[in-house]
Image 1 (cartoon, each protein chain N blue to C red):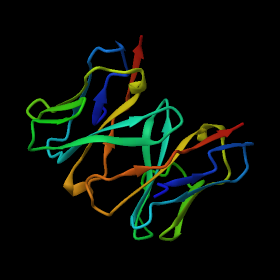
Image 2 (cartoon, each protein chain N blue to C red):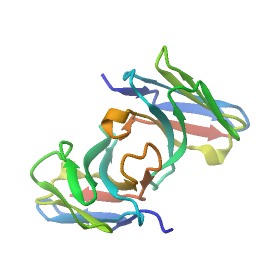
Image 3 (cartoon, rainbow over the protein chains, first blue to last red):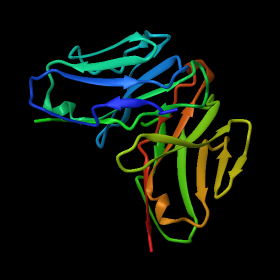
Image 4 (cartoon, rainbow over the protein chains, first blue to last red):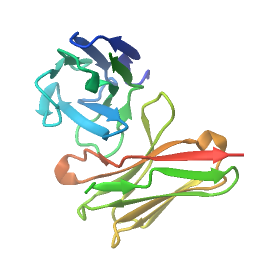
Length: 114
Length: 112
């Protein structure tokens, strides 16, 4: 199994541009999570999906952030327009729904907004 | 305050034991976890313990849980330079769909 795959690994963009981060969960996992990691705030849960349906997006910081999961094998996190304070490492994770362990994280996308 | 608290840094000499401590606030925590994050990588589950256990051992790793004091520790025996990483403590409850709440992480630095 290739694990959770995120792309791109690194993204540098100018303020105001649209940014799209991508995630492919592990096959068979039906829950998908987007996290943001910064030095200041640590690891924050942004949104999670069960069976492709968004369950809790209370962690999404602003309307500039949106996430979709059109099918079981693909999810996107979009920031439009991007701002320098969005600079962070964004992680995707997946697992079987309601399983207490077995969270698998991707390697992350390091986003820099200049 | 934070739901899960950990010290930010720990420095040990290679070959010594490392002990990383964590405190949590939710008494209904069902599972407690230790994750490891190496540079440029995502978090990797190292081990977990169910709340009705006091101790769990897995090779060089020993997890101790003091439920009364809401204190969790991770001991790494014979610490190696490859153990240098950030270690995250996390808790989850059944009512929260077992979604972990993570601490800020402890950076373990192993020096020769």
